[in-house]
Image (cartoon, rainbow over all chains, first blue to last red; front, side, top):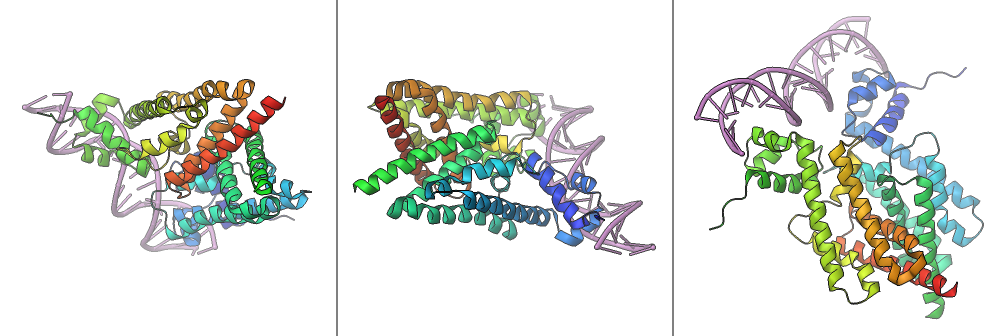
Length: 195
Length: 195
DNA sequence: GTCTATATCAAGATAGAC
DNA sequence: GTCTATCTTGATATAGAC
């Protein structure tokens, strides 16, 4: 038989579902506790404080996103499609279980003035992961321009996420972003082969 | 002699400087009052509540941004430069008096779950302004592809703003965004003249 | 319109039993 | 580890005088 998830996991699920859709500050601990059906003291025993819970939920979320992205890369057939896989990965990830309002990491960054150490680390890991993998996947496509292409893709992907805040659908934003990226790749390939 | 700004303007200045850098929720009314050197009752007499103050400060900010953008457009020499003027406008606007952490409008959108009517209206006006002007400026550059180019530029500009949250400097983000936009314009021009 | 003082409320976190 | 009950703080907003 399938047992009930542990109090710890119920807390993480509730935190993800509430704080990353309603905003961290706008989500009282009380509501997380209520949804998780857990007593206050249990939260503080496991995570120390609210920020600890949010940091752990964010870390878990980034892991899940990374896994979804890697799956989409593995399923792509060409170097170019592997580079562009981040866009279908976004829509498939977002159609999954827990949909945040836009990007959980950027959302936390936006409302956290001076993030604690755990939180700051997780936040910069997100940008680092994107940058590193974009660079790596760019090499077979544009060679020496990989660094530049990675910067463009990070900006475009960030733009896709931002468009969700402007009320655009994930599908539409991802489609536009994919097309934007295509123009940049074409342009950089031309400059590489032409130079 | 130069008189002291009115209590109303001191409140708006303080709200802009604090709430748009530290975050709205993270900025207590007390701190705004303290900085503005104004009594609580005065705030509520002028703006009704905290949200009213924030909404008015945001509206004023968008007006200033619009003016800065229009100045930069007027100073540009070619159709293409007018279209790209949004990037230098961003850096010049941000080097001005009151620098928010990234974009005040997106920041408010990010932390406001269910914005009140005034706030929601101002927020959508921001996206509308960008979209309309991008489309208008795109026509002489890419003709029938103006709608598409406007969508790309909105995404890229949103990406530039989002990069500020990732810790990138306004100058670097705007420079990358300008280059990204250049590739898209080139690509669309080719497709227009080639079709 | 503006001030001083304060009411009211909700939030994060803890005490102590089991 | 988990619960019930509660402490403490800090926030928004208002009352009433000038």
